[in-house]
Length: 125
Image 1 (tube, rainbow, N blue to C red):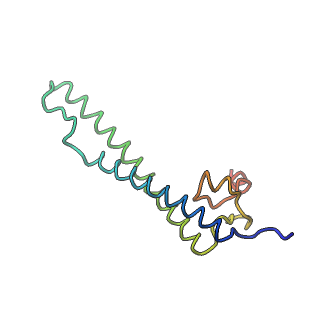
Image 2 (cartoon, rainbow, N blue to C red):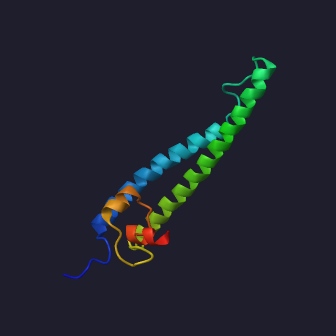
Image 3 (cartoon, rainbow, N blue to C red):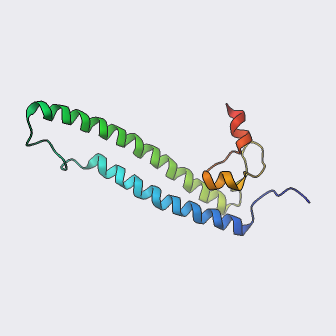
């Protein structure tokens, strides 16, 4: 039997559904992070002592920086997932960009935006 070179339409549809679910959750997380960054009126320090206020503002700045980094990372994750949807439409999804062989279903279920097989990923190091 010849080695399989691409996933069937049914398999691609299964991955498409998985990716769409991940996109929905990732978008919700991204919006939450964006709101965390821009929301300035909650848990404020207006009614606390000046010393505590300075400490609290420092912590809030750090927290906003962390949220900003997480938001950037979440945005990049969304872009990778959307690129995976394009590969599904092109019927190139699940094909390792290094070896040209199929990436295992287990790997794609764990990392649906993967473009490298485990072997190719290990060779990158």
